[in-house]
Image 1 (cartoon, rainbow, N blue to C red):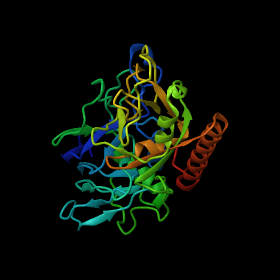
Image 2 (spheres, rainbow, N blue to C red):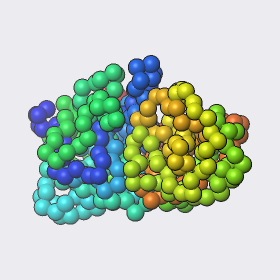
Image 3 (cartoon, rainbow, N blue to C red):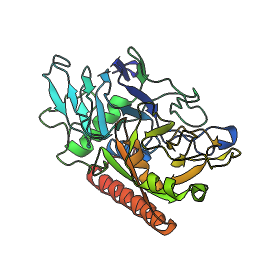
Image 4 (cartoon, rainbow, N blue to C red):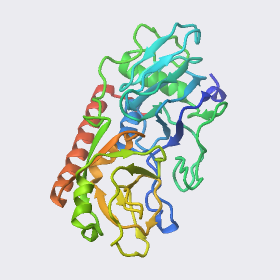
Length: 353
């Protein structure tokens, strides 16, 4: 199989599909936020499932996902929302079949895969053995859609280049997990294309209700008491205008008449700003790097994965925590990811390449 076959073709684009890796940290000095996968832990797990380095480029899909044609054999994994994945009938000589998620799967060349709208969760991350082979811009292959840096969002007809040895890597890595033949040109036995285990689901437990641990922001004390009560005393609804820059929340508007005019200052992922209309905005991966609206809350960093699964119509409630609890949540979250990755290394035992 030639390197020219190492591509994925977009048959039909989903609601919002983009190439992502772990982003571009450290670029705020040129007014560029980190971007990258909205849930970096899920992107890291997807890559680990197929034997990639954590920063390999894959796909982030939002809501109803894409339909993709695989032009070579691939070892592929999907992590995140409950996207049902199906192999369409008549492709690669096989019948229609469900493709499991949360684990690596061997899919033959010619297959057409469709990611359906998830009944729970909002985003998933797709990794393939070897990763997507796109040019790097500022040390990342990710699409920063707000700034127009990196690859554009996926459209029908686009062909995404893979690692030139994607098929060979897929055979070798599948063999390490499934016992398939180690030779790239061999025909594997299709009776078993995925392991029986899978990584644990990591969705908000009460989705579509999402409880966010938050710290008091720099300007929280400027809010009148009634506004603070309203901020924590209601479920806010995620608006349809939300995107990778931020979540626009709708609900009982807070009284902002007494808040002063402020100079712009740095903001980050999880900053909760309060525009004059009185409905909060939670900044996400492609946020602007400075803002002049009051910063009333800061979402604890351990809740990054919760923010990534908030789609239009989800309800968000805030739970105030102290700095010690936020730090404890972050440590616990990092420890859980380390344990998952260690378990995958033991389960997969991928060969050195």
